[in-house]
Length: 324
Ligand code: BYC
Image 1 (cartoon, rainbow, N blue to C red):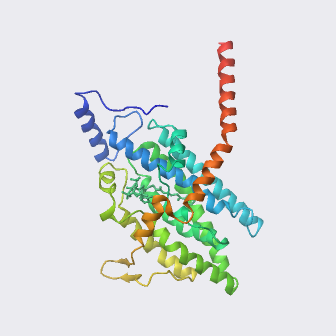
Image 2 (image 1 turned 90 degrees about the horizontal axis):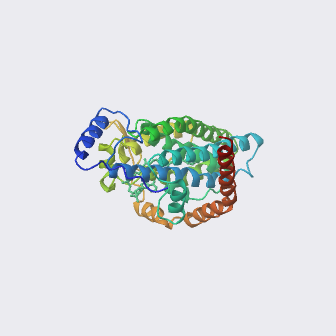
Image 3 (image 1 turned 120 degrees about the vertical axis):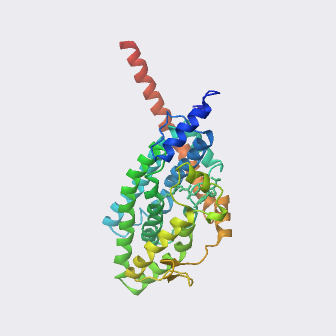
């Protein structure tokens, strides 16, 4: 499907822009048929499709553990979570399609390395404690980032976020509950949890994106109401939310600079390794090549399903034509 040009006719541009700005300022939703600045549309396509890719690629690190889940209960929980992630990807691709892009094209951009997905999924899952820590920290960070996005200015994205956030909160709780159980277990189980927390803490902080001073998109996205908070504000919120949970769990967080600051009314904490972040989002993280290769192989393997669905739709269409 070609990209729709939603630029207004010459002469009407100014009125449309005023109308758009008024709606955004009044926190009303912009809907797919409304006029929107081309930059707004492009930014949304970028963010929503990268978000969708993250959900789909994010199925891999945990999906690897479905076959080795330690009990039937854990397997049922993990299966449900990974299936939810596929669903989130679908809601988000559908939201992106309302902006005039085609999902197949977005998938190609991902596979060909022309679009990003969340840095967090380029780290390996080494044991079952990682499944719990992904739920607790990664889904916890995702909730922090996504709850404000329920109020984002583009209607289809905001509505997708409402559904996604409900499911993310189950994801976060199942992770925390798994870790709680492990912490009640043996010394070796507690050590596994601590090791997983040590490995996932900094990558979780990186999920919120570069520092505000190094974030080229934040200011404009805030003005358009696409983003509601800055990267640093959400990172801070996540740290403040997570510290008491870590204490309750009985694990340490691997940051010697992490301390409550009475004056600021929040925690001080150390800087993530931004060079590592840049490497990971440039395709050089520990698992980037493997994640993309698996996505490409899955896409190719699914070609017959897409062909069959199109043939089925064509058959129905021609059957309808005969009977009308
Ligand atoms: N990873 O100007 P900035 C999940 C890129 S999935 C990779 O701050 P922006 C889950 C950024 O794209 C949750 N790239 O950008 C699933 C930009 O590059 P481009 C995923 C990153 O967009 C399965 C450049 O850096 N959540 O929860 O204003 C299992 C400059 O950054 C990252 C979302 O996608 C990163 N971490 O802000 C379990 C949330 N950070 O595109 C869990 C929706 C930055 O110009 N997205 N970059 O080449 C957002 O909220 C925003 O896009 C971000 C970045 C805060 C991530």
